[in-house]
Length: 83
Image (cartoon, rainbow, N blue to C red; front, side, top):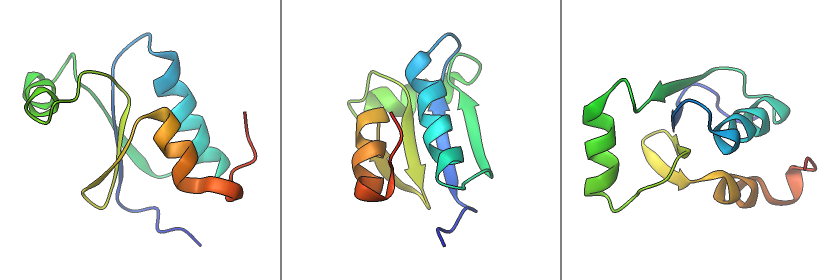
C-alpha cells in the first residue's frame, strides 16, 4: 500500500496535465492529496521559479519532488496501467 498522507500537487486552472496527474493518483488509490493553485499563492510560484521549474503540475511526495505528469507516470512504472 502506498502512503497517501504526504502527496502535494502544485497546479493552476485550466491545466489538463494537472487534472491528469490528479487522476493518476486517484487511479493508484491515492485519494488524499493536497493541490495548491500557484495562481492564488504567489509564494509557491516563486518557489517553483527558484527551483528552475516553469511548468505545472509539480508533484511532491513527503517533501521530495517527483516531477510533472510524465515523471509521475514513470514513478509508478508498471504499477500504473492508465493512459
